[in-house]
Length: 251
Ligand SMILES: C[S@@+](CC[C@H](N)C(=O)[O-])C[C@H]1O[C@@H](n2cnc3c(N)ncnc32)[C@H](O)[C@@H]1O
Image (cartoon, rainbow, N blue to C red; front, top):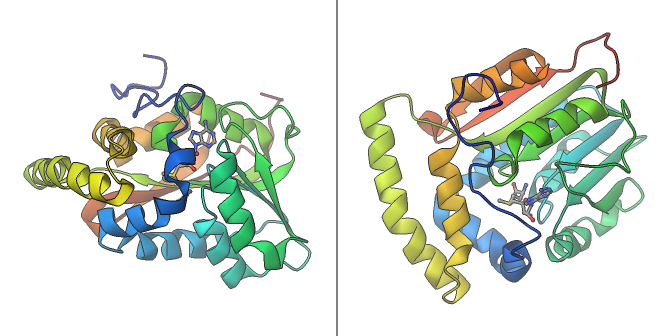
């Protein structure tokens, strides 16, 4: 175990994007899947996290695992793009192609980048003011992704994370997981026309992701300061935020 005291695996979903182009296969159905899995509630979560991102001070924002651009679309609607640069990144060219279409009106400010959140050598150290990642950390190696976020953030830069979390009432959380174990395979199977892998990773990522307190501790152990979190929908997801130290040596 290398991250803090957490017993959660570093890659909650055990997803290896180089071995399985699952998001490429479901790209055209991804947004419908989100609606189906969450009964549309993901829209409220995304609206909330976009508001948080928009309210931060930044000229350069890097969004990791951006998918079909759902978060950036909302950020742009709230914060505008005047004088700003947004790097919307993902490992899936097919997800990015959808994001590009949806964001084409803002192409002067939004750059779509094929980037692995765990290792982004083309992004200079201390070059972005804010880093966001939504519903992507559970399918990455968290330690590597968080370390890379810290590296690219300018001193004092902000990180904002929306991710699966835990309902603090254990019985309720177990009931939620039991419900998801039944409902996700059925909905996933129907929505993807029988592609079993579509929901396997997401379900495992939800089950194995650390608690809100655990993720906050991991972020602090990696070097983020002022880490706080807010539970949404009883704790089904949480928004964590933190700051890279104001003065530090290169990581
Ligand atoms: C569950 S989707 C989330 C998409 C979007 N952020 C949202 O909130 O709708 C996860 C995304 O992470 C991407 N992804 C998976 N592993 C990645 C990695 N190592 N680096 C960057 N993106 C990754 C997938 O291609 C997919 O688009």
